[in-house]
View: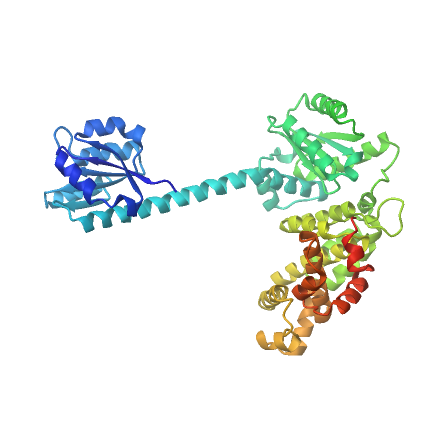
Amino acid sequence: MDRLRVILLDDEVLIRKLVRMKLNTEALDLEIVGEFSSAGMAVEKLEELKPDIIISDICMPGVDGISFSEQCTRILPDIKIIILTGYNDFEYARRSLKAGVNDYLMKPVQTEELNASVERLANQIREEKQKKEAHRKMVEERQSNIPLLRNTYISRLLLSDGINEEVRQKLVEYGVRFAKEGEEEVKLGVVTVQESLSDHECLMHIYEESRQFFKDEQEIHVVVDPWGRIIFLGIGENESFWECFDLLLQLLREKYQYHFRYGTSAGMADADGIRALYVSALEDMYQRYGGKQAACGAENLEVHENGEFQKLVEYINGGNTEEALSALACFLDCVKDAGTEAVYSRQGAEQLLKRICIRTGQTEELAHVEEVLTWCRCSTDVARCLERTTAVLAMEKAVQAEQQKGRTMKELIDFLQENLGSPDINMNYLASRYAISGSLLSRMFKRFTGKSYSELLSELRFWKMLELLATDAEMLDRDIGNRIGINDPHYLSIWFRKMTGYSVTEYRKMCL
């Protein structure tokens, strides 16, 4: 932080020099930026110098120190002022406090007393500046996150037939406003970019260009749905919406030479009617291009919207981990790459997991989902990531429902993750550490994670190993084994092949 700026005010030059000599500017990290013999001269320079602290005599020709202080606090509200006076008068002290003076020292001022007063005020100033800076950063961060948050809540509109009051309020907070009773027309366009199915950066380029194109239109929102389709949502009087929509597609085609497909819909609707318009736009797109696209198996998920998918969401929201994992099984075929029987699509898995996170209200897990998927180098790991995330989401709901046991289980799993390399940790150790009987602990593992202790430990070791392989390509197998608690290199190789179907060497060379 920069040095604090100080000005001295006294009509006697010797007093100003004496104060300057007594101030410990180095220790207190101060800089004296001005000395003045009159209040008028100081006031004229106040905005230019922007001092943090003023040390002023109380009695000067023309304007006294108290009147001067009142002028200063009007110009610089955060200024700190120390008044020096030879008058031990209660009325002066009372007027000083009323004028916003922070300290009132008697002449001849003692060195220790002066520096103690300045240090106290300097600490206050720095603390206030830190709070303001933290608040500024918080506001900036919040502003930068608004597009993501708006995207999340608009995605809920696309996926839900009805929304609650909390979602409505959040939509308003993030700049999405609907007329009551659906008294205004809503226009909705859906765009897919064929190339984005295999290139996520391509999708982000198109999304950012589209967002910038409409950035000055407050009632037009551009978001990405869980399947990587770009949604254009126009609310209210947007007479040129379709002209702009067509122009944007034309410009994007010319610039990128990509293959775009689109569908449109419009109608009088409020927030609850957005899903119907979204489905109508999808149907329009499919009709325009001769049926559903077969490029990504994730499209098949839509047939489960009101059936199996709803069951999966309900199991997760109910904290029923085992049931949620069973319900997930019917979706594994939906995230296979088109034209294959056994290769799971990372993008398909990501889209399904995004949709699950949105529908269960756990969007904070999305960033971690994306990270974990980048660790996966083979198809079976993608399927395993689906199961892992589903279990994590269901466990979070179970923890909320059974707070005491849930907190214990969460703390226990965090402890295991942090101490995977320890050879001393086993069920007996954990039962003793958390004062739980072994039988109860076994039931808690099954209840919250859907797995036994040994199954969970193996799962934690597996994902830690994938993380290490992804983040440190040079790490030796034996060092990885030591980090995850498998110190025998031969056993590590057998265990890893059992988990993935590949040796560690083969896995290192793979790229999904």
